[in-house]
Length: 112
Length: 113
Image (cartoon, rainbow over all chains, first blue to last red; front, side, top):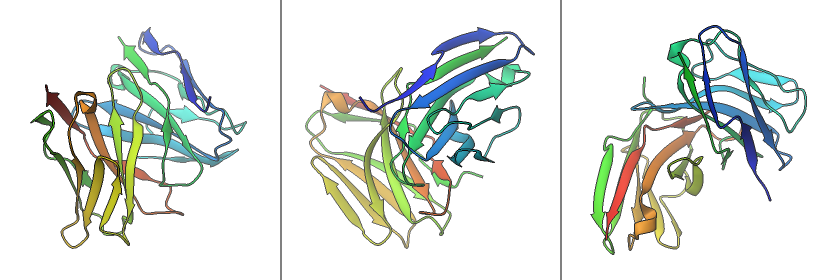
């Protein structure tokens, strides 16, 4: 089954404790992206990747890091999480930029 | 700077009637538009799209209309069904070569049985 998977689905952590949210897709997509969804703000892009070893900033990259060492995986790293990073995070992938993106189920992160 | 705007946070429609969701954009470089549907506890799923070279695209009960001069697009669902109750996001892109997909804030559609 074609899918994008994210882990964990739910995470509660404390300020400053480094964490990684994993994202994996099995569709051989070149493009992958991370978004955060906040009430009243919709989906905002954090980082995206055009292919292996190619990443770039989206609208809200501050406080986040990403890496793309393999085509299928695109982890999101919060080196020192803060409460304003409490949000619902989605990973997505696609074959062609700007066209249909497939989303993962989301990771709800709470930073206290 | 919200380049894609959905001014109605919520909409309620009677089952069987037409649902119309609206979206406005400000960036004239956008040339491809998409609608996504999102159920609670799930990721958004692609619904329908339209290129700027068209003014209408239809897929079953779903039709998207694009008015480039007004920088406005709308999604029509007819007839509306209870399973259509979800949050709908419109999104816009500058097309291939532009890496960014910009989303609106979403409209929560509730279909009343």
